[in-house]
Image (cartoon, rainbow, N blue to C red; front, side, top):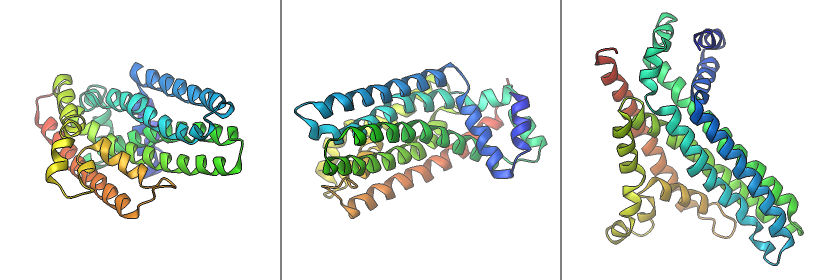
Length: 269
């Protein structure tokens, strides 16, 4: 692994660090399991497209990329993000990554950028790439031009969803799991991802119309995708969801920077 770090650092200043972060994100058994799960989801979606196209409910073909993007994000993508983030700072310190980066004159900010952007890139390749493959198969299976166009439109909305998922979950996962214990990290993730979703019915009664769905990360991502669908395009809904997700990313970046600083003050193991 140290040899990989040296090779990546010899590349361009920005691209090498991102490639290094991606390589670190792919390391470990969990990443390989997530890749296999993602491939299985895409293959299932392709097979389902052929079955749906020949059946009595062929209009449902357009839902294939929507369902695939959700399955890839909350299945394979979440597994990859968690596996790449848990104890990430501790692993990098134990393996000498931080020391080698520091010796090469790279700052803590560059290290974090490498980790976050690398994980984002890998998550996007897994979720958005898989969605494109499934959407292309569904579009080709459509028996009418109108259905093919609708499926392509839904694929585009699903790709935006997948990219937003990758950009949002990467810093959140590292903020929750990078420096904390495994149990503490998972509890933090539950608090961020699950509890707001559970409380959504309550928030709907106290928030203005159109904002309750944005109180959780899954809800904001779903709103972003739904606002781009051909039959329900809503620019204002998209802008609201985008603003909420962007705010979450900024807050996550601040938290992960603080977590790294606190971790560096701890006594090395």
